[in-house]
Length: 221
Image (cartoon, rainbow, N blue to C red):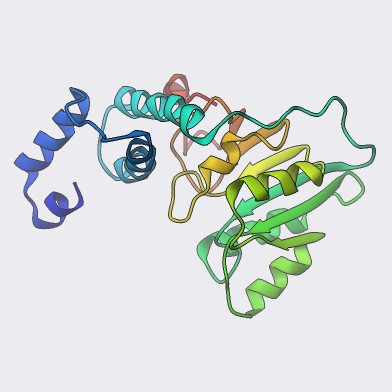
């Protein structure tokens, strides 16, 4: 897909896209299927495709993720007393467009009502934006190098009420972590404009420019 786009081979590009429509491509195993679909769901946002196709691929991914990544963690019977605990996950809490966009939103959280957690997957060097982000969150947790199930257990132990995904299927995303459902409510925000297709994502936070009302039916969240 990327090579055909780069070299202007649009006839071949259309053949590949038609192959996706007709489900001609088969994965060798569940691991390859999950990995390929995660890459495709991001890549296909850059092509002018019918939303029905994107939604169908996303739903296929959801079924694969549940089989491949395992069963969700046990649900908590009750929440921990105190403020609402909101956790944000990203590999880009640094001098990156995501880091520059998210810090003001976090700084404006009402600290009397919300306790904020950042779970960072990157090994970013020190910078003014990194320090500002670390100051914006009450808890800034470096989880790089952790397995996805270990991080999910950590989030569950922190008593997070709302877990916010800033990645979707972009580079270094961790959808497998969300598949374990470490928080009772999980939402996608800002980093990815398409549907995740995932049963484990309860909501997507967007405006009518990012998701026109006529397209909402093709979003699983």
